[in-house]
Image (cartoon, rainbow, N blue to C red; front, side):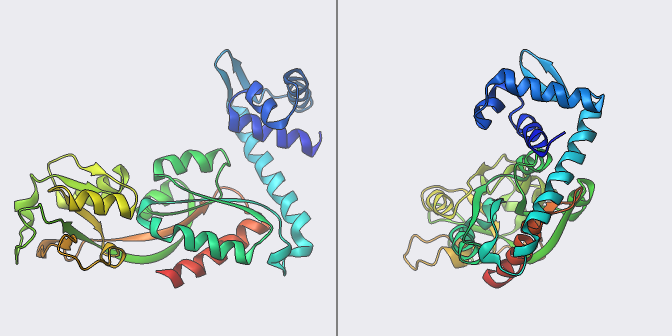
Length: 297
């Protein structure tokens, strides 16, 4: 059994196909199949169930894959141990997903991280939490920054750090009949069209709001502002939105004075896998991003 074989297994798991994994590894498919068969024979366990559609882990395979991930993470930690006091010398790959709620921090996070860890292959993308669960499960992403109920994180066995608490506010553009109202009641809005960041975000906040219509979704500040300015929809957004859309023209979306939502809020979290030991690079990245987010927010 070699480390290279274990790394190959992880790529097969990610690609869900031996042929696709072979292309990613720049190997011939028969050679990769032989390597997989050899490892399965030495372990006495079938790791993957083969089918014309691809491969899926067996129940034994799932347990083996968890162990393989731990071995590779520990190996990475050992190889990087000598550089632990000098982030500039650390190498490796870190992938971070952020919720649309935090999209305004996208470029700040990239810039500051690359300044701290110049040799690390750092990638950042915007994904909803339902996708993050899959990416964590397959080892494709290391860290997520998202609004998720803490009980959900506990159920999924994720580890996390709590970030800033944000209040939910309603915003409307000049085409909304509520735009110039000095007072608006929540009951008046329950049949209106709404705008929210994502399905998971809406599902959670609407437990208390009880809006009866299906919202539309937008994941970045530019799209949100465009929709609010050019339609009569109402945005159920984080209080940070008012700072992001800093224009002062007549068409700027404004916050509606809805007293019943004064106490609605949510917490952001820095999330990482809780079912395995983190590599040294992951630990340092989590620590750095936690401090950075507390500063930027």
